Image (cartoon, rainbow, N blue to C red; front, side, top):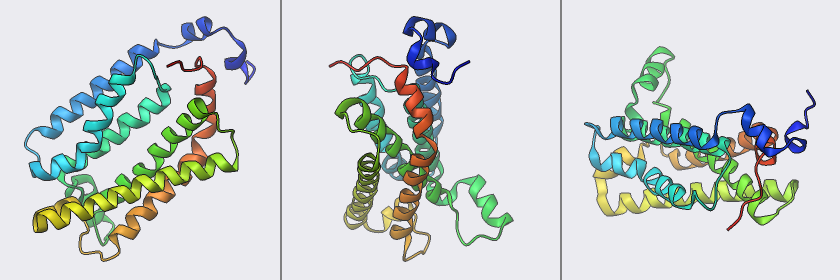
Length: 224
């Protein structure tokens, strides 16, 4: 088959080749909801749990609200679901105590539990992919250097705002915010978090574009 078939074949025929997007989106929502229910059952600390997962608590209802008018690609929803699950797992255990990464710490004699680095990597990878789709589909920014620059700016702005949030929570709550901050004694934790985010955004721009462009090509132009 020709590689350019998504742009040439009728949309109705494309939908016959794969499961209904609505069903796939519903399955992603159900899976994420199940992880949420597991996460809220006896977490390490409810205050930390709420602080860690509140981005998902805002994003998911917002996506459901705009779904009838503004619908992302299935790729975007899949990445959002994965990111939400990362947040929920971190909220349940706290980022410094996720069991698998504690095992990795012991097995490989690491200096810390690195789950928080995974979380910040995802904080760059997923928002970069979402920002790229929004800029292409809803603003008409052309693919090229400017698109890459804007996507990186969005990802790093989100990272910076999150670090400011951590600072504000720490100032207002004192020692009770330690598990939320998850510094694990590292004076450069904030800088490493933002570096992880930047690396995640770069990886997204290297890995996602071709797959994302095919997904976008299969969708009709969004309407308000």
